[in-house]
Amino acid sequence: MSDRPRVGLYDGLRGVAIVLVVLSHGWQLWPVGWIDSHAWVRPFFRNGNSGVTIFLVAAGFFMFQALTARRELTAMRPDTALVRRIVRVGPTLWVFLVVAVVVSASDGSAKAWHADTSTSVGHVLTYTWNWYVQGNLVTSRPDFGHLWYLSVDMQAFVLMAGFLYLLRRRPVGLLWALGAFYLVLLWWRFHAADTEFIFQVLVRTTVRIDPFVVGVLAAAALPQLRRLEVTDRALAWIAALSLVGLVPLLYWCDHDLAYLHWGGTVLEWDLAVFLVAVALGARSAFVTSVVGNRPAMLLGRASLSLYIWHYPVFMFVQRHTDGWAWQARTATGLLATVAICVASERLVDRPVSAFLRRPGWRSMDDGVPAWLAARAHPAVAQLRTRADHEDIGAR
Image 1 (tube, rainbow, N blue to C red):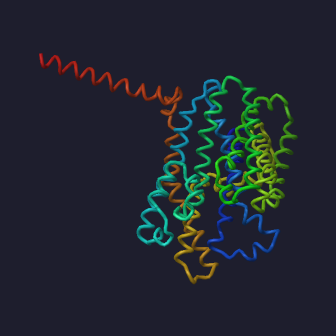
Image 2: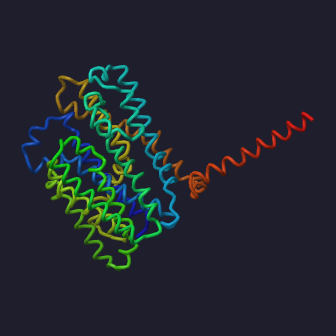
Image 3: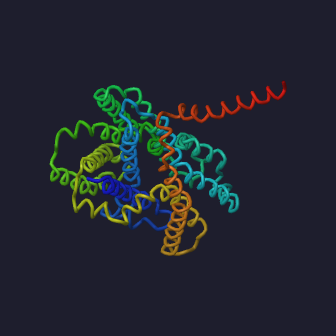
């Protein structure tokens, strides 16, 4: 299977995820009484947690592939991967924070919320936002609330990069270690869900990173799974069934406790099965029609912008449309989100993606220290030459 169709299917899966996340925050725009009273509708409008799980499993899967794309596992460079990750996510987030600060200063929203904007921005920038929110719910900015995911994602990236680097020379041992680590995280998630305040549990790093670990484990197991030589027809069925399985799993994960127990656990493994099947070459007209269609792929490619911008835009519209009919408020919120994200894609995300595709990034393949040393060497030589000339001139 060519790389482009495979990536397109992954984009489409992320498109499904961002739709779930956006719909889960729609309570800012539309009434939810009817939705909550109809069990057959509620899972599609109240399942942001499942959408985040899709993002985390996919992020772990892609992380391992990125670390081993041009090098073997034994020669991986986690520092280079981390720099690329920060460059990929950072600019969109930084632009959003600047706009948010300017807007809050002009409309007085921070004072109305009694929010500490500078501290909130600092924790978002350092990817410690979810830690701050746990103990400072009153003074944290509510329109930044959804950004806990970016913090958990980056923390999981750093943790897993170190984990993989330490075990890079033991591929089989790595699988066993990842499996053991996952079981510990799974036990902790069940324990925390049963004994602690549900809000704090839902933004805690140690409770939310197990989908990321599952994604890493699935990608690390690919070399072993390729030896099974599963037929293309079987792979197509596996991918299709894993997609179909998402629907009942959304119903299972409808409530927080169900999600934090077996619902979320089965969901993350179902997603891992789909990612592996596609990576092994699954071809299916059904899979392509569900997650390989153009709208789903476009949403997936724009998922970073949509994730960052949609919730604060919804809150801004809700705050400034008091007395409007919910239909008008919803239309305004959605159109504003689309317009801002289109601008963000063209002005920020596309240039960043083009920058990351430049051949110059290959000079960082040997690691950030080697890259800095190579950049510093010509500068040092130039300074020495200038000093020599000045010394000769003085004589």
